Length: 191
Image 1 (cartoon, rainbow, N blue to C red):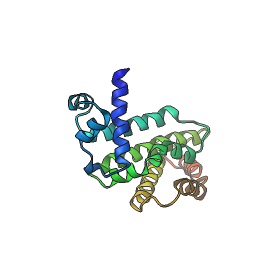
Image 2: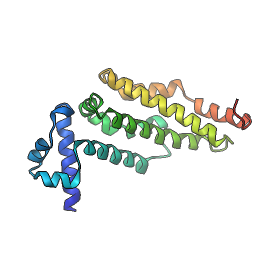
Image 3: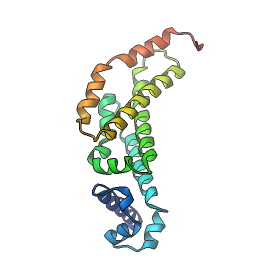
Image 4: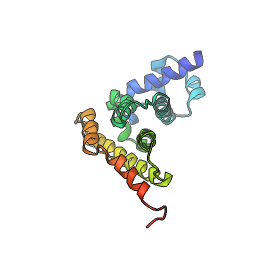
């Protein structure tokens, strides 16, 4: 129990610092001082600061997987899945403009893939779409959502993300179902 507490304290302290200043200005010394632990304790849990970032995003992704709700729309699921990032906008911004950008992009891509994959499966009920086409539909929306969020971050996160995602949902409402129905009508060969 104490181990999990210490590990979580390190992560929480790091995110707090990352919400205040850029990643390049945070050191292991800063973290251990704020946590009132020694360097050996830090290195018992993490090899470096970058591992903390990976762990935080891995834990958040696992929460998305565990909490996915089949009654919600993909828009609601995606907003719920990205709530941690929205609550820590400055931290996300600092990660985006650091050498750890790819960790953030992978997290966003994985979240979008998880949400869209489950949603496509749910919409496929009663339709005989091919698994290959389902994967392509998922990949298209996964890539699009990821790029939209990355674009939003790169532009200073000014727009309300909830309004943006809900608007996208309204613009593309029904397209996934239509694509699945088209798959049902196509033969299995590639053009």
